[in-house]
Length: 268
Image 1 (cartoon, rainbow, N blue to C red):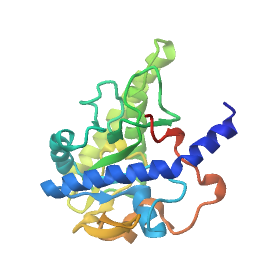
Image 2 (cartoon, one colour):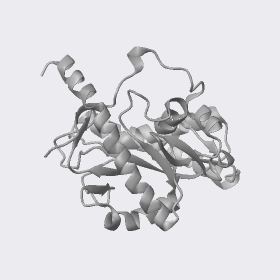
Image 3 (tube, rainbow, N blue to C red):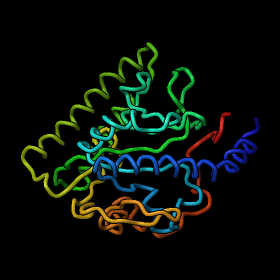
Image 4 (tube, rainbow, N blue to C red):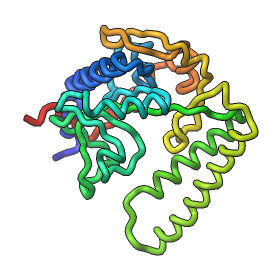
C-alpha cells in the first residue's frame, strides 16, 4: 500500500481510536476508585486536557501515572476486574513482551507502531499506558538527563531482539557497562542525597531524565478531559512545564504526527 494512503487510512481512524482509549481509561478509573488507587493523567494526555480539554487533535494514545506501589496494587486486581475484551499487558502476562511498560490493551482492535515486530507474538491492540513513578534523588538536571538517557537507551538496546554477530557481541558489553555505570550514579545520589522532594518514571522508562516535585503531583487534583472529569497532578502547570517547557505553544504542522503506523479500531 502506498505510504500516503496508509497515512490517510490511519488518520481516518484516529478519532475512533481516541474514543476506544477513552473507554479503556473509564474502566481503569472504575477499578482505581473501587480500590482507592490514586492515578493521574500524564504526558500528552494531561497536555491535551489543559490545552484542548481533551485529546491533542493528532494524538493517538493515553498516558496515566501512578506510584509503583499503587501500580502493583492495580495489577493485582485489574486482570480479574477488567471486561473480557481488555487485557492487562505486562512482562508477566505477556511473556514475549520486551518493554517494561504496563498497558491495557483492547483485544478487538489493532494498533501497529513503527517499533512493533511481527517476529514476536505479543498483543497489539489499541491501548493506554500506565507509568509507575518512584522517588528520584535531588541531583543536577543536566546530569539527570544524561543518566536517564543512558539507562533508558542501554536497557532498550540490551532487550531488543539480537542476532549473533561481532557487532551484537560488542554492543552487549558496551551498553551493559553504560547501563550499570549510569545506574550506579543514580543509586549513589539516592543513598547520599535527598529523595523526598522529587519523583520520576522508573529509570528504564525515563529517557528524557525528567523529574517532578512531589508537591506538583500531590494531593491529586481533577481536570476535564473529553467532557469527563479525571484525576490530574495537583499543579498541572508546573508538571507540564517540567515535561514540555512552553507547553501552550502549538507545534508546527510537520511535527503533528500520530505514533501509529496502522490503526484498526474494530477487528470484528
